[in-house]
Structures are given as C-alpha cells and as structure tokens.
Length: 453
Image (cartoon, helix red, strand yellow):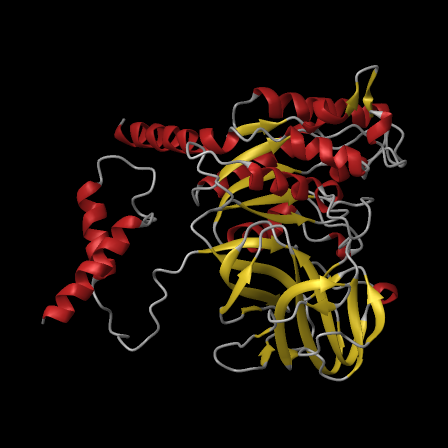
C-alpha cells in the first residue's frame, strides 16, 4: 500500500509540474487542472507499459521532406548504407530519429540504423556509435505515406555538433521522400551494411537528405520551427558550413543565458524550409514541397517540443505569378491568417518575417514589387503575428531598398550569401521569446472575454 501511495504522489507531482494541454494559458481553471493532474497520475489499465509520460523531447535538427522527384532527379540505392550528417542546435543525453516514407510509392525497408557523433568526413567519433531500434527491433518496414520514430538511446549529444546517422537499405530503394537541398555533403556506401563501420567505404556523395526528417534529444526546452522556402533552406550558402540563417540563430541562442527569456541554451531550432516552396500552391516539381497550408501539420505540429514558429514565405507565390497581374496581397494575407490560426489553436506563437528584396531576380517585375511591399507593410503593422522579424530591413540596400545590399547578395539577387544569412540570423530579436508567453496569455484572455459576452 505504501509503495502504491508513493507512486501516486510521484505521478501527481510530475503531472502538476508539466504543462497540461487543457489548462495552458487559461485562468479560472485551477480545479479542472487539479482534476486533470490527478487523472494523469492515476495508473491506467496498461500498467505493464513503459512510462513515457515524463519524457520531454525537443527537435535539435530537422528537414522538411518533399517528393516524389521527377525521373531526372530520382536517386536509387541498391543494398547500400547512407551516412547522413546533421548539425544539432541543442544537446541532450538521449536521442532518437524520425525516418519518413511519406512520399514513397512502396514500403521502405530500413535494415539497420545507427547514430553517433561525427568526427570528420564520414567517420564516427570513437565511443559514440549507438545502434538504433524500432519498437525493440533492429530493422523496420515503413508503410507508404508514414513516418517512424526510433527507440531512444543514451548518447551525449553536444549542442552545435555534427551527428552521423547511418541507414542500411537492403534491396533496391528509390528516394521518393527526400530533402533536396541539404547544403551538406552526405555519403553513400559500397554495397553492404556498413552502419557499424567507423569509416564508411564511400561509393559516392550526395548533397540531399533522403528519408531522415528529424533528430530529437531529451530536453526541458521548447523548439522553434523555421518555416519557409529556399531562403530559410539556405540555398546558395556555402556547402558544409551551416550558414543558413536558422543556424546563425541557433548559435546565438547557445550564447544567451537569460532566465527571464527562459533560453539558457535549451531552445532547439528546427529548419523546415524547402527550396521553391510556396504558401498557397504546389510547384510543378514536387521537390519544391507541398504548400505551407498543406504541409503545416506534418512539418510544424509533428515537430517535438514546438512552441515557436517563424514564418517567411510568399516570394515564390509572387514571383511565379504573372508579371503584369501578380497574385493579390490579399490572397497571401488570407493564407498567413490560416497559418496563424492553426498555430494558435495548438498554443504555438507565430513570428512573421518580412520578405527580402528581389529586384534583379529572374522573376521580378515592378508590379510584383508592389505586392511584396504590401505584404511587408501588413506583416509589420497588422498586429496579427505574435512578433515581427524584419528581414527586409536587415538585408536591403538603403540606397536602393528594392535590392539586396551588395555585400549580402549571392549573385542571383534573390538569395543571400553567407554574410547575408548571418545578418538575418542576427536580426531575430531574442526578446520575442520573452514576449511570446505574454502574447499567448493575452490571446487566451481575449478568447475568454469573448466567450463570456
């Protein structure tokens, strides 16, 4: 009896200490919260199941999947091992991965999987290699249209470090689910299962991430999802340098020790940018990803620990519309409002990012510039986002505001270079993460007052 009572008290304390979905951001519900906490503390019928209720996972890295690619871009692997290199934002003591077959046309067989800290190239640092399992099994078959999470393993994962994730693919596998623009060298082995090899026998290289979409660590902190297109994806940044703007933000967050903001090195940054992506429509080449409105649940809501969202999207919607009669700003604003509403419904704060200059790009026209300016004016002034990140102001040429500052231009007048991406990462006000909680409380109060009327 004493043991059962102690277990109940422990569960109740644990339940009260973590945010409860039904209670978060609401007043006048203490009794309801207490009842919910007690209910969570009571043992369920599955008494023999693993106790997962105390686990707190945060995305430390991520990439948004797209596909299937056209035949000319399709990668095929035959009895080979992929060694995929990813860069963490925060650290932890346990780790798991997410593997996706969401755009596959056949079940995806993972014959073996391992993770370790990358030493250099395709090499895994000694003493860090860990075998991964899926529901206790060393291999898994992922159904068409589905992702899987691996079982967690103990591993000291450093912040701002490279991990090597190895996936053995028996048989012949088409990479129909892939993140195309990784800006990172990854490795494809000679035939065979080399997941446990410290040094991979490399047959060829790839600069995409097939199948792997997230790495999570155990953490007490939340995650920021950076949602957007090629400018968030880091297109035209230098290969293998992690110079995307979300990378620069992650580096800044690791240097901040602010208990008021609640950062203290524990805010994960997950990059869900896709090159060629749009807010409202799908590009002809599906490597550009489904629209933001279509992929929102998978790429935002399914991210472990997500609490904040940055949204920079729309330049491809504008650029790919007719020169003389471009998409109306009102259409894009309606799309932004949908993203805001869907995020707020799940307690996620949304920070709107202004669209950067693009005069001189191949799909620029003066009429499209009018739309970009209207969208940016709305983002800055509408007060519908929880905060604003002014990337336009941070990157434009003061002498010619419709163009990039020359020092920040990669040369195509659409994408920043490394220095431009650094300027963007530095332009994110870290005070947003202090004010987001207050904004969420204000929304809850307004909703409560509206219901009371």
